[in-house]
Amino acid sequence: MQGQDRFDKFVKRYGVAGRNWLERPYLSRRSFFGIGAGVAGSGIVGSFGARPAEAANVTSLGVKTRGTAKQTIFILLTGAPSHTDTFDFKNVSGVTPGSFAPETVNGVVMPTGLLPKLSKGLPDYAIVRSMRSWALVHGLAQTWTQIGRNPTAALGDIAPNIGSIVAVEKEPERRPDQVFPTFLALNSNAAAGSGYLPGTYGPFKTLPNANGLRNTSNADGEARFKDRYAMLAPPATSPFGKAADDYASFYAAARGLMYNPVVDAAFRYTAAEREPYGNTNFGDACLVAQKVLKAGQGTRYVQITFGGWDDHTNIYGDAVLPARARSLDNGVSQLIADLKASGLYDSTLIVMAGEFGRTVGRLSAAGGRDHYLQQFCVMGGAGIKGGRAIGSTDATGGATAESGWSRNRDIRPEDIEATIYSAMGIDWTTIRYDDPFGRGFEYVPYGQDDLYGPVNELWG
Image (tube, rainbow, N blue to C red; front, side, top):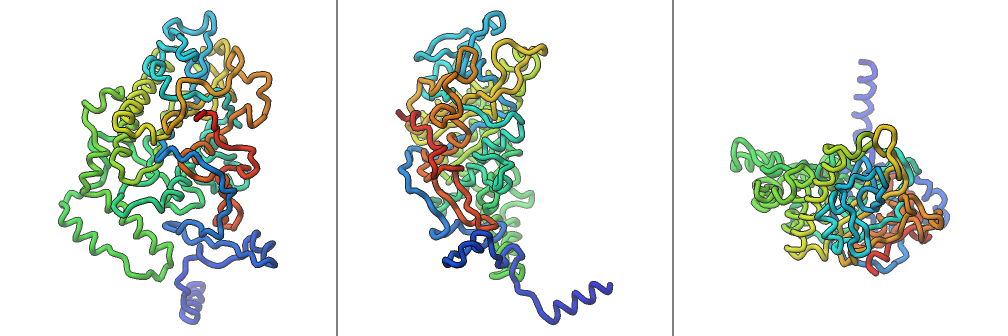
């Protein structure tokens, strides 16, 4: 108790400043080296609800962006699908099942038996075949794909999801009546978060459910809930600082989703709506994604995770690659069809990729394919010219001899990230100086040096 007595005396004598620890002033490395020139570092505003960096804390080259997409759907195929069995098809004599039925569509060989609907719909999207991963470890590469940089690098541990950058950039465009989260994550409980950015820009994670969003009603009725919520109203100022005050924004956001018929219409679905998407969890996510975008309630980035592609054993078994391919084929093809029917496809960028690819040629002793750097990325909508492949691999599905490490030959996750930003009208060369230590956070690493940038060939 002696320590407590000393603490109580200290508080009584000096009082409290009323500021959260995270808001205290500090001297960042950037400030230290720039102080002679009058350069001041930026303080972190708080854990939640912080304002975006001010103009003085942002630099960019002012590059011209595509700006053809109002929203993005990013489909992450975790576990890494085999590229040579799907979107970079290679027919291996005596190995590839005859049921895959390869045919040439628009000059591109596709497994029409494995992906019949997506093969027929090839004119709607393009395939990037010259993409290579940086790593062959699932967790590392999956995070790399979501944040567009090495998670183990200097800023990797605080790097935001691509969707969080979209959310912070598009915040000024939100209307007061829009209540949906800007960044929605479906079947993506392990999705990368907002990094150093405020939690309000992080992914709103939920699992699709035919009954809609959970916990958007109260067992005691709406009237009683309103009374309770009114009693919860926070004071004008909190003795615990802005970080505590900003929790009010989370309450308000949650309140906007409750007892809201627009929310119910977007997140609920019927058996009849579900059936064309394949009656699978992945199909449900695709269905909800298009309904949410159609509602026009502020969602600009949707991440859908479809896992289970780690096929080291018996890859051609009916319950392995063929089963997941059916789910993918039904879900994505119907998603495209419904977006086109609603007039949203031309303003929606669809991106689909795993974290890496799978070994090429003959199968392993276990009848599967192991981890491999070469992979694919499917991109469509937003004015992309479909029906073709960008880049190429050799006859087995490996890197071509001239591929090397050139940015013009190998497309990396950073290039895909830059492509998303450009399509969304976001300057990919932007550098923010509002991380906790005032360091420069690049939207795309080396984007200002033109080492990585948009895959403009997709539109050409």
